[in-house]
Image 1 (spheres, protein in one colour):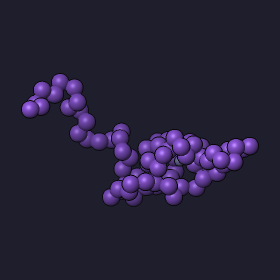
Image 2: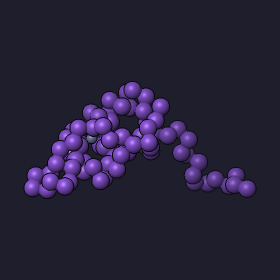
Image 3: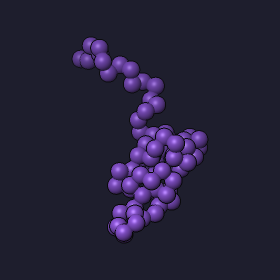
Length: 75
Ligand SMILES: [Zn+2]
C-alpha cells in the first residue's frame, strides 16, 4: 500500500512567512517533505501513523538494499 504523495498531514505556516508551510508535528518544511513520507522525521506522528497502517517510506527500511556494493552480477 503506497501513495504517490502524502500531503494530508496537518500543516502550519512559519511565523512571518505566510508562503512557507511546515508539518505541525515534526516542523519540517513542506518543500522539504515534498509529499514523501520519509520527508518527515522518523518520529513524526503522521509518519508513524501511516507506517503503522502499512505505508512505507521510500527509503530507509528496504530489505534488499544490501547488494549495491560488490555487485558484479550485472550483464
Ligand atoms: Zn511530519
